Amino acid sequence: MNKLMIALLTFITLVGCAGYVPGRQSYWDAKIRELCAKDGGVTIFERIHISKVEVDRRVLPMTTDGKLGFTLKELAHPDAPIYAERKTTYLNEMNPQVGRVEWTVIRHSDQAVVARQISYGRFGGDLPTGLAHDSSFSCPNPNQMMSDVQRLFLLEGETK
View 1 (tube, helix red, strand yellow):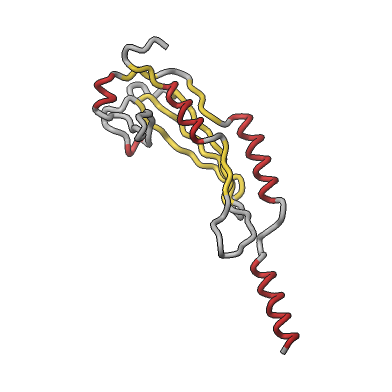
View 2 (tube, rainbow, N blue to C red):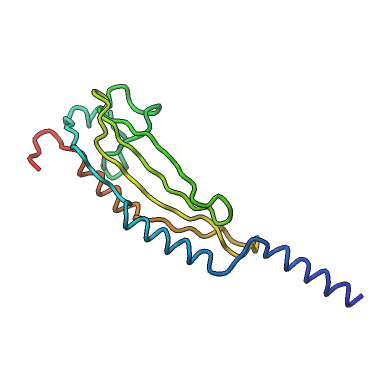
């Protein structure tokens, strides 16, 4: 009975660790940092003029703290001066899942690309315990990107 119990525990341990390879998270986190340094973040090609009236009408999405943003074409207000297209590319589909998300911001009037936002992220790669959520890592910092997006908008009366 004792040998059967040891064999069963060994089997459960091996199955529980299936897919876990120490160092995978470190490898992908370092790779994400490298890729992020290369092309991550917000790039603005042309600023968008927006009036106070448009801001008040909420033609662009706004955070609770008053920061302007953009959304997918399908979700955009009909009078929004810009909309976005999102493309997700998976660099690793298995555990951990690693991807690149690119938002292309397009001016509605002439379809010109006015900005691009690129981020990278990892989800998972942890020792499967069933007790905790998988870890994650992303780059660049989402708060920094939201702050950088604000440079896209030239509010009526601003001279920047």
